[in-house]
Image (cartoon, rainbow, N blue to C red; front, top):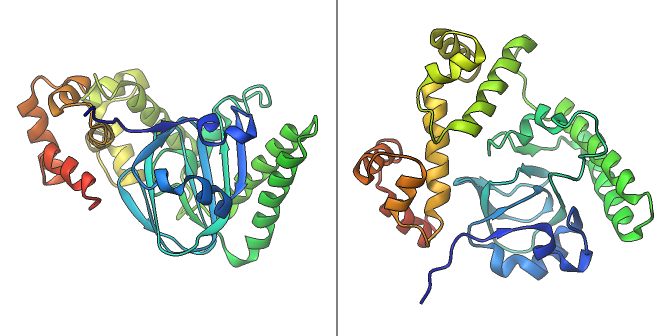
Length: 295
């Protein structure tokens, strides 16, 4: 029997009734009634994914990190992340999917969404707790989006975009932890480094390769990462490689040797040592734990 790979869903494959490649907006209980049976297993998305919980219990995993479901918890995922649902009892709230192109011709700044840490692709940054004073306002934004989606007027898409932008700014101002003021120049440098990692982690393993493109020294880059994140530049690079390795291991069609080749390790044994040093188990053991739903 042919092994199945990791499912990666686009908006149309999940919400065919919406007839839209760019947007899906529903009440969460309705969405679960239709899709929960095949979304409990690890899967990926080709779109941005927002869920606000207003009730429910259980947990969900995002890139192999587990988060307990809490009332008025909102989580944000970006294309490429892997997650799964594990609810006990009835969960409800709101769900919005939008494509990478949804804001393309609406905003002059094509990198606008990148300014929000909850769209960084870091699973912990993407989970937000809505304070009581904002809960009704956030619910109203989701309600307006759903009504506009159902109304399907000529200008509904633009109204939805405006509501989403208002939501993002509201979240950024009130739900993102900022323990101290950090100069914008340092934040920009760190973000540029993280974007370079995303582009080159398969081929560039050394901080000095990134430092050269950033026009700083490797020592400066390490000091910046340690100051802002408490990690070295090398750790950030290795963490991204490990995350990709774990994502690929959810694909049963790929052997460990093929994954090692995909990540451009010299040989399978080197990849095994690299993985076990970080995770404490071998790639095959990690895959077995995924299959038995222990991660």
